[in-house]
Image (cartoon, rainbow, N blue to C red):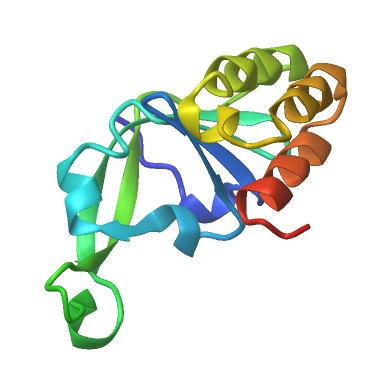
Length: 146
């Protein structure tokens, strides 16, 4: 297993976990999670593509420490934790068509289909020629920044 410096990502990034897509604008949005998410294998076999088209394959994540005040615990007794990602291999540069296939496969999921702009998103992914553009576009939708 390989450990890659987490700050090598060119943000925003898109992460594929199980059948879901997660967008992250900075390291906290990918390297901080709940203890429950870590226990439920959120990071297991995750694939991350950054805005430069670099694919990172994650084996799993390791808890480093509690994140924030009171070691990350909140009033509901859930804990936020900092994690370190463990990668299965060295990062590789992929082409835009590979990313489009990954996105289109994941966009079939319930989260994306429930929106009224699903067909517009599909069209945007199909027509894109640029990593940063499509990830930024999905980030705006994901975080409701429109």
